[in-house]
Image (cartoon, rainbow, N blue to C red; front, side, top):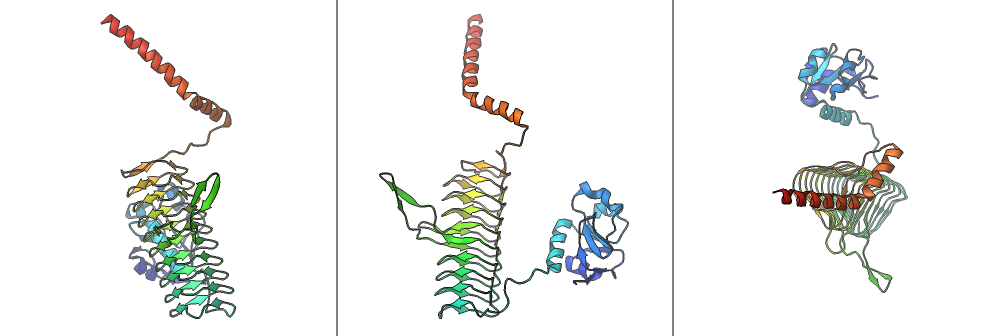
Length: 345
């Protein structure tokens, strides 16, 4: 079991300790569930009343909330960020692989760095470069000429197509596919003619990609994922998409080909993007947003329709379907009113 003395934890977090620093912490838990061996945190004032009955050994909070606390506390600027660091310190997630399993199939010209681990039944094709401390889980396929920088982790059953480049300190979760063909076809007399996708995918450093996400290779240019990008589960990123540094993408997002997204954007879950448009830096799209046109001004944008009782939704839908007729009638009335006003004058 993991354990750490509170005074040592305070030093690692650069936090101000108020209370007993000799307490031994062996876990972290929500404020209403934590016991006397665990630490908790208060990052949302909605839960401030839980401090009264909190049974945790210590709590992480801001200076302004310290007056409400009657147990040992660590004071920080941002408790949620501190929680993230504690979770990293206490993380007991196993490695995707240990050593190189005897069942792995590795081409003779593959370059393998120091402390590389590869799980059972993984296939590594010709020309691949795996830098130091790369970990690849069981059942993966790494295609020709793939380059993976140091300390990148691939979990089980991931497919990386040929020529893909992945940066350092990345984490890619199970069943993700990177470098599959983009949806490129030409139509000749009703028949679809496949266009070979000649680009690749380039992924920057410190990128995190969730499970069952697909990132297509470029048609001619490359699909590019910038440094520090985080992508949730089950996203579709089409050919030639470019995503700027430190952008966050929630689950189920669909991005059409040729889309360009700027830096430090936040994309809500189940949002859909048209192809060949540009989104500038620092744009937030709320959940289920349908982005049909370029955005050139930072800010928060929404288009999803909130859930309604079915009867109200039916009425709303009827109004929307009749909006053109309503608009024409309104213009007719305005024309009549304006004509009468002109006669009076």
